[in-house]
Image 1 (spheres, rainbow, N blue to C red):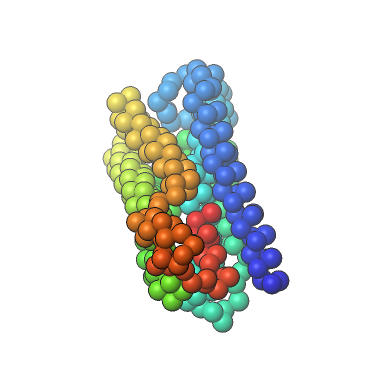
Image 2 (cartoon, helix red, strand yellow):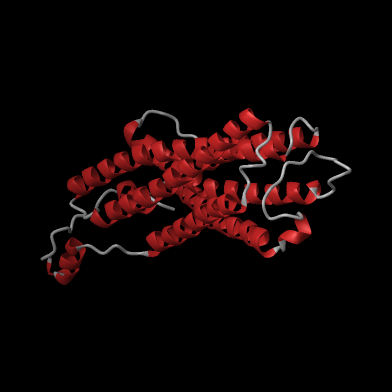
Length: 290
């Protein structure tokens, strides 16, 4: 009973954090898009500038713009990191029953905190004039592409394990888990498509930055209007699509033919799935996603 009460508190914290992160992501993206670019920088396309450059006072606006953009990206990625951490905690109960389980929110905060520290170090190096704004953009691209690849791998592994757990529990308890399995498949497909696309975009962009920087000592040629427009459109429209799909998936019931058939049987026992499962097992399908 004590474990159940503890899990209830964990689930509440995770759900609250999940929707809070969606709100935070939307806030940062709205701020970045709604503030006129002319207030932050003279050009929509980034240009190389050093911090505290008296000849280019626009470095302040460019720095703030990049930080707002980065904060939105970290908030978005944190949504999936939260789901993966929560999934890992639940799976540990079934695949490593004797192992002491850590608090999901603590693990989540440690991972996100690590990413925030990297970004703070990058900002500090820029302010210390270790590199120009080009260096900040390059580091962000490398970091986001790396995190995207890790998320693709982890989502695929955890999704397979979760489907195995659900199907096993359904067979043992004679409870239909088909709708939960469909939900997991949807999250896996949409999440992997988003992170694969993001990893591809960021990796190609980082590669181009490194190549131009190596050949010309600057990446000014990379930041042309057509290329920057394409990069930003792919980046932000993919974010809009993934957030919309996530909300749709989490709110959809994914009713299956087996559930419809069971409900049609009424109270007369005609349905195929009538056994009452163990309390913890019954909550697995609710714990699959936040």
